[in-house]
Image (cartoon, rainbow, N blue to C red; front, side, top):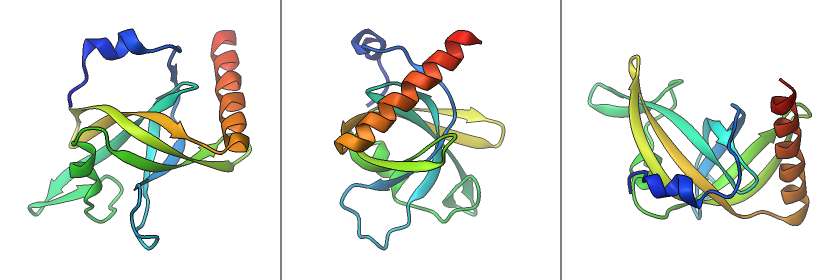
Length: 147
């Protein structure tokens, strides 16, 4: 599912450009499955975009940062897939969790790495974590408006 112009038309909130650390895991994967550390490209009250650096080494897929090859990349290229999110809220360092649905993806080449970008709509989040997320998004918006 490639990104379409209509994605911008469906948005209800302004996107805030910020890179924050998070980890993702395929929803329903075995607990022993290691999460993948990624960063956001932007955030909004309803979701976020993620950026994953990937490259081919010796005919195998590897992630930027030397993480082991993973099945998450092909998974993200399928329609409407669900991810478990572990988002690090800055500057306090707390972590909140949620479940997000991949709404769009695209690929690009930057230097020696291919990047997969994916837009994720936050579908589920416990109310306490949702409040922390919304508070964090409001704080980022305020800082960016003051800059």
